[in-house]
Structures are given as C-alpha cells and as structure tokens.
Image (cartoon, rainbow over all chains, first blue to last red; front, top):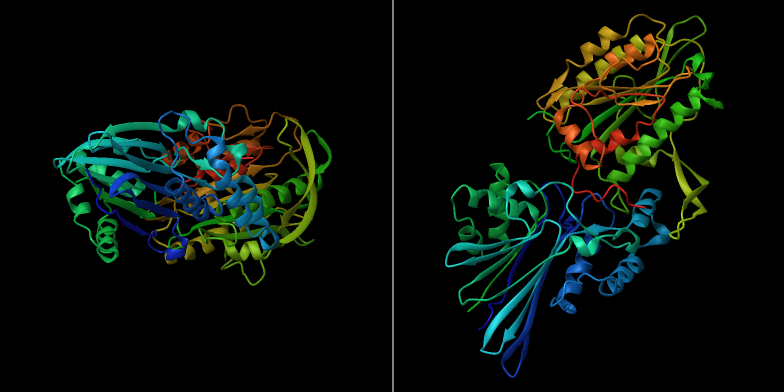
Length: 254
Length: 284
C-alpha cells in the first residue's frame, strides 16, 4: 500500500499578511527503504492568535512532528521529553535583547498552538496502519468510499470555540497536557483520503456534512494554492467559513 | 446576534475612558490609608491599557484591534469644565489613537515586582511597566459635560465604523457629579449604536465609603450609597456574548450583571472581548 504525495495549502486570515499566518502544515513522505515505505508523518499546527511568537511555535511543533515522529503506540505523547528540544529552540529564537515591553511580558508566558499529527507505518501484509494525536481543534478527517469515516478529535461543529486545548512553549504552562491529548489509530484501506485541517476549515466541513453534503469533494478537488485561496475566499465571503488562518493537508492511500 | 462583530484590524473596537480628576479624588480609598482615589484611577487606567496592549501584542509588534481614547475631566477654580484628551495629538472631538500608537506613547518605568519562582515561592524581579496616566486631581466633577463630549466623539466614530463592535465607555470616578444629573446622558449614550449593537457604558466607582468591594453586580441592593446606585443604573447590562466569553475565563456573570464595579478591579473586562484564539487564563 502506498501514500500519494501530500498536498499542503495555507492562507492567512483575510486582512493579514502572509507572514502573519499562524498556521503551519508540515508533511514528510518519502521515507522508503528498498522501495518500500517505512513510515510517513504529517502534521498541522495552529498558533493561538493571542499568544506572542505563536507562528514560530506552530512551525516548530509541526516540523518536530514530521522530523522526529513520536512513538504513538502508547498514550504518553506529547511528553515533556519530546517537547523539550522544540521549547528550547523556540526560546532561543526569541530576540530577547530587542523585544518591546509588551512582547517580553507575553513571551515569558510562552506561545500556544494546537497540533494534529498522523504517523503511518507499514503492516506485515503490505498494508498500512496509522496513528493520530490531537491537542486542540485542528482536526483529522478520513474519507472512505466517498463518506466520512472519521472526524477526530472533534466531530460536531458545535465543539469549536475560542478556548481549545493548546501546547505551550513554556513547560510551566503545560500542566494536564497529557490528559488533553487525544489518540486514535486505524488501518488504511486503499482509496482512503486523509485530510488534516485547522479549525475554520474543520468546522466548515462538519457543518456542511451535518447539512447532508459531501464537503470533502470540493477539498479533494483543490490542486493549487491559487485554487485553495479562491475557494476559501468564496466561503469567507458567503460567511459559511470563519475568517481565520486556514490550513489543509490532503493525501491518499493507494 | 448583536455584539458578535469580528474585532480585527479592518474592524477595530473602540474604548473611551473618562477619568474623574476632581478634588475629591484626593481622598483616601476606603480601607487603604495613604492610597488615594486618584492613585487608584491612574492605576486602573494603566492596568487596563496594559492588559489591552498585551492582548494585541504579537511579540515584536502590536495588532491594531482597538482604538483608544482617554478624556480627563475636572473644572477650573470657578467651576467651568476643563476637559482634556490626554493622548498627544488628539482632541476632544477625536480623542482616539490606534492601540499601537497608545503603546508607543507610554512612559516605561522599571519596577520591582513579585512573581512566582516556579517552586511555590515568590521572586522579586525588575520588569518594565508602562505608565500612561499620572494621578491628578483638582476642583469639580463635570461628569455631564464629560458624557456629552464622549457622546459626540462616539457619534463620529460610529459613523466611520458602522459595522464595528459597539464602542465601550469606561468611566472611572468617585461618582459625585457637580454639573447635574449624568444618568439621562448615560442612557442617551446607550442608545447610540453600530450595526452590531448599542454602545456599552461601564463604570468603575472609587469610594471612600467603608463597604465591601463589589464586581459586576446584577442588582443595586448591596450597594452602599446613592452614588453607587446611580452609577449602577448608568451601567450597561452585559450582552449575552460577553457573558459567554467571561465564562471561558471562569467568571460567571448573571443575566442582569452590569458593567459596574465598586472599589474593585475592572481589568477582567478586557478579557471579555473576543479577538481570537486565546490560551488558558492562568498563564504565568
């Protein structure tokens, strides 16, 4: 079983500059040995707009997830040990000497971000299994035979609010994180689509699904950043999607 | 639903502070000898502006989610109102600055503050603290004039921002108006509206009366005097969206709770406004 190369799209909240996009999507795919896939990882992280340097934190987290994919076979992720290098990197990247007073106060609190990540691993019979972890309201959707087989960790549009669980760059502010990280696992079936998305798009998808539509069809039909931007722009203008940083990864199992 | 407008840089929210600088503000605050009402007024304003600045800070820069005005009101020795828009390059007709300009205008002082040391104790550390307003007080309390000026400037602001979150007035006073009854004027201001709802009027009452501090009450029964009850009536009932936002920081507001505090902190008001994904309220 193979994975198609993932497609990644991300655009900022309308009115914001691209560099102000606090979402980040990372995908690592081509981990192959002797022509056989040994593993892959994808992640979406969404920085909380109210924390400082959250874009840097979201990028750091998503990178870390795909560059050193955690072992998700137990429920210990995200452990302090796994987070520590990312937290140290974030801290070292803050320009403490020239930061203004307001930024210093915010940065001391730490930056906050969601994370949804999926790792794939081959199974003995040339199959593929997946494991997912989620903190906050960035979601994973699995579409099987043109139906929604999984919506994780949220499965209702009513579950979204402005106070999702978040991972903090300051270890002192991560109490209870282990309990708030949710885990899921499954076997891939040929033809499955995996969609990872930040909250505005996830909520839209669940709303349209609840209305009896098949909203993934439009998403899986997006092939370029320009198409994604136009498509999200239309949804924002008709107010069916909240104006927020919007990020998506799609990939298919063959 | 009213009070649900997106607060963004394209669609900023507006907060206008009215600061009582009358002679009676030199009196000590109840239960705090040596700490005057005018000290608390300056501290309250500086504290709220600090909280707003932090909410808008992205680290290196400030996002202009808010426009802020500060009008100080007092009289000359003959009782004529003297009102001042305290930010540089502003006027009573247009007292507003973008929050990034407000941040730039602060005097920064280094102060020793106690912070948790991470091991259950407190540690004294030097921190940079912004100051916008110094304590000042003299003569009378032209609250009616202050509300009239506020009403005019908000009228203009609303015309320029018809779709914005409704403006908020925060009046910090000891409550004794010397130029008439301010209540009808406050009621009139509450009739001004954007397409998202009516102007919200909040009052922070600083009093020498020895009584329990009260935060966001839903009735006037427990309030100690007529001035407090009048300011309570001059304060808006919190809209539903504000109450649900407050609940997310574990502050339960009753259906009839009003934006009124008596000798109590008003800083949490800043957290009631929805400007995007926030973290837990207990960040160190």
